[in-house]
Image 1: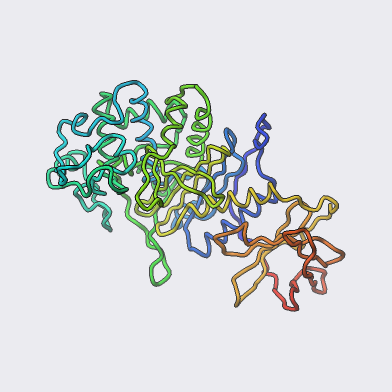
Image 2: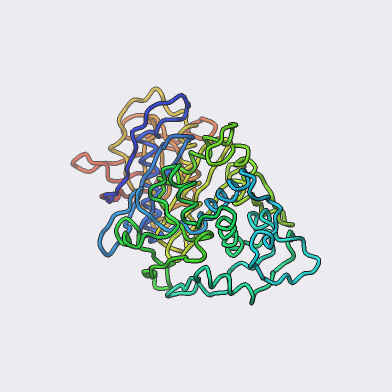
Length: 473
C-alpha cells in the first residue's frame, strides 16, 4: 500500500466509556478505505476526524494539499468550509438572542433599516430572523451577483450586496417552502454587526473563535498560507478524467454564509463544545438550552423530506437516528460537519476538490467504527494474521478486495465502496491457510484458502474455486 500520512492521537482514558482511540486494526481499515476512495475518485487530498464527546478517537489524512509542490494533506490542513460558516453565524445570532438583544421573530426590516428587497407577495408572512435561520424566508438563494461563476468567482463586497437588494424580490412567500439562501445568512451577518455594534469579523473572533481556541478557523481564506497549510482547490472530474486547479477566491460580502476556512481538528473542537453544553444548564458562549433549541426541527418542507433547525440541517442518518450539522461546497472544496447529540459522536471531513460528497466519508468512518465496536471476534484465536492482509485483484468483476484483521478474525472489504461496513465479511481461522466465512447468524460458510509461492509468501486466495491474485505493495 502506498505510504500515506495518518496521524493518531494518544488519548488519556477518561470517565467516558468510549473516550479512547479506535484500535490499530480499526484505524487501518479506515485508512485503507479512505486511501482507496481518494485514488479511485481522483481526490487530491482528504482529511477527516472522529470525535466522541470531548475526545478525538481517530484523525487522519490522505493525499496532497498542493499536488504541484507535493505538500501533503494532514488533519491541520486548512480548507474552505464554505456553508459550514453558517453555523458560526447562527451561533452569533443566538448569542445575541440569549443576551436579549434581538428576538427570533424580529423582522429583517426592523433590524436593518436599509433593507429594501421587494416583497413580491402582499399576503406573505414577515421575513424574520427565525425564517432566515431555517431557510424558509422566501428570499432568493443568492445576492444579485454571479459569484459562483468560474474562472474568477466575482464575490461582491458588502456595499455591493446592499445595493443589489433594490433589484431583487422575494422568490416565495415567507414560511411556505424551504429555499436555501446564502443571501439570508449574509443578511444575518449584517444583523450581527448592527445589533452588536462590532464588525462581523471581530465579533466572531472575540465571541466564538478565541473562547473556543479555534486558532485555525477564520472568517476568510488565509491567502498568505495558500499552497502550504491552506490547500489548493480543484474542480470536479472532467470528461477527460482530470481535475483542474481552481482560482483562489474570497467570499467578501458573502462571508457570513460561505467565507470561513478551518481544519478538521478545529471543527472537531467546535463539535466537542456543543456536546459539552447541550445537555447541561451551563452557559459557554450559548446556553445549553439555546443550542438544543437550535438543533430541533424549526421547519419541515411540505414533502416532509427536508428539515431544518436554526442554522443546522437536521437529518435522519443511515442508522435511522437524528443527526445535525452542515455541509460546505465552495469552488474547489467540499466539507461536512455531522453530529449526533444522542451518541455524542461527530465527524468532520474536508476535501480540496469539488464534485464529491463528503458526508459519505463521514458516515463511512462512523460505520467502520460501529462495526468494530459491535464485533465479538474470535476470542480463542490469538494468532497473528498479518501475513494474509493486503489488497487482492478481483478484476474484471470489481477492482480490489482488501483483507484485514479484526479481533482475531480476517475481514474482507471491497475497494472502492460507498458502504465499507456493509461490504465487510468475516472469516474464522480453521487451520493452516484455511479460513471459513462467519455468517451473520454465527454459522460457518464457505472456505477461503490462501496459497503461497516457493518462498512461502502468500500470493493469492481461492474462494468458490476461483482465484484472486495478491497485489504487491
